[in-house]
Amino acid sequence: GAVVSQHPSWVICKSGTSVKIECRSLDFQATTMFWYRQFPKQSLMLMATSNEGSKATYEQGVEKDKFLINHASLTLSTLTVTSAHPEDSSFYICSARVPGGAGNEQFFGPGTRLTVL
Amino acid sequence: AQSVAQPEDQVNVAEGNPLTVKCTYSVSGNPYLFWYVQYPNRGLQFLLKYITGDNLVKGSYGFEAEFNKSQTSFHLKKPSALVSDSALYFCAVSPRTGNTPLVFGKGTRLSVIA
Image (cartoon, rainbow over all chains, first blue to last red; front, side):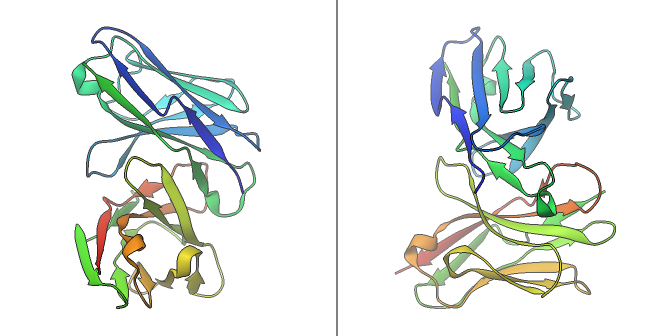
C-alpha cells in the first residue's frame, strides 16, 4: 500500500526558533498533501491543503506566515513552524492522497511530536 | 457542510465481548466513509472504507462496519474484542466529488479490559 513518512518523529526546540517537518510519499506521487494538528485527546484539525507547485490553502484561523508550507515536488511537502512558542507544541500529522485512487482515501504519516520549551 | 459525529468519548468492553463504536455523518450526496485507528504517539492507520456496493464492509484486524443510508450511520463493529484493540478510533467522511480532505469525528477511545 501507499506509504507516507514524516521526519523528524519528534523534536524539542527553544521558543523563538523555527522547526521544519518533512512529509514524503515513498511509493507514489502525491499532488495533494494535507497537514493536520492534533492536541492531546482531541481529533485532527486540518491546518492546510498542500498542492504541488502552487500555494497552500490554509484553513480559517491558521496563520500562513506562522506555518509555512512548501510542496516543491510530487513526493515532498514541508511544514515550517516559524518562531515557535510553547502554544505551538502539538502532534503534527501529514497525509497524502493517491491521484486517481478510489474513494478519496488518505494515507497518513506517523506524525511529529513538537515540544517548544 | 459535511460533519461527522462520534457520540461516545469512551467505550469500555470486556475482552471477548462484541464491540461497537458509533458514527453518524452529514454530507450532501453519497459519501465515502472511513475508519482509522490511532495508537499512542502514532499516526492514523486505515481500518476500512465504504465506497459502494455491499453495505457491510470488512476491514483489518477483524473489524467491520455497516453503512446505513437511512440512518446516516457507519458504526464500527468487531465480534470479539481484544485487549490490543484498545486505541483511539476515528470515523471520517468525504464527498464523492472534488479533492477535499477527509473530515474527522472527534474520536472514540476504546478500552478493552481483560
